[in-house]
Length: 159
Image 1 (cartoon, rainbow, N blue to C red):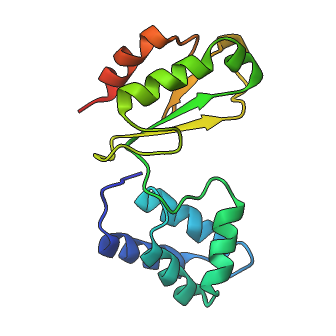
Image 2: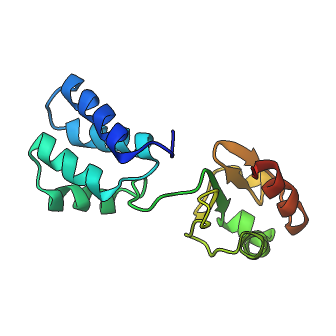
């Protein structure tokens, strides 16, 4: 996932993906996944391009984007911090960890830092309750995290 691809280059890559894809009922979802993988989110230009290429109304595409939580029209950070807010994690202090992350990054849950390095979001449950509270940074899992661990974890991912 290269979040620094230009719209122009991304659309060229998307065009190649679309022309190599089968035109069937699942084509739209597959193309949306590919677009999000390419850009890190679904920019307006890509949505309109996909609609044009697949002959699908843009309103239908936005309906799908809003239905599936995987898709986003907002750029995310290079490091996506996802904090589990499920019962086990919450009981073990995930709310305090969330406040500490917000404080250190200067953003609220659901936001991305201005430099596009970090995004912060809460999840319902990651299914690792024995490690509560759990923080995911991209694919990396940090278990039994506390307020005191946040500055170290953030520093590990800063450039």
